[in-house]
Amino acid sequence: MAAVKYQFVVAIETCIDAGQHVIASEGLRAPHHFAETFAILGDAGYLEADTVAPLQDMARFRNLLVHGYLPVDDARVIEILRSRLGDLEAFRAQIARTVG
Picture 1 (cartoon, rainbow, N blue to C red):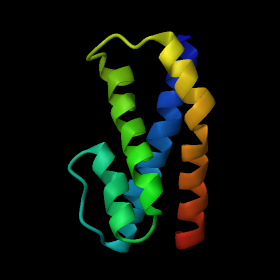
Picture 2 (cartoon, rainbow, N blue to C red):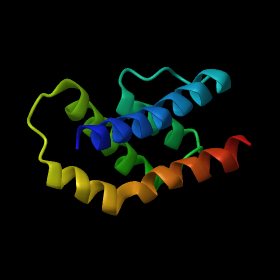
Picture 3 (spheres, rainbow, N blue to C red):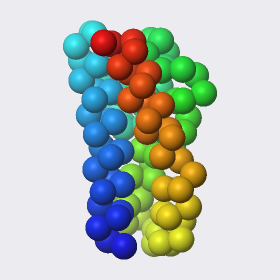
C-alpha cells in the first residue's frame, strides 16, 4: 500500500507543480500553500470553479500522506483513488485547454 500512496502523492504533486508553473509563467500572484495554487488558477480562469475545491482537498490530503499528521486509513486511500481520479484528469484537460 505504501507504493500506492507514493504514486498518489506523485500525481497530486505533478498537478501542483504544473499549476505553479502556469502561475509563474503567467505572472499570477504566488500561492502561500499548495491548496491555494488551485484557487489562484480558478480565479484567473484556468480552472473551472467546480474543479478548484476537489483539487484543494487533494493537496491537503497529500499533506496528510507526506507529513503523517494523522494516520491515514488504507481503505480511505483506495476509495479516493476509485472515486476522485477524474479530478486529476479534469485538471489536466482544463490546463491543457486554457494554456495550450
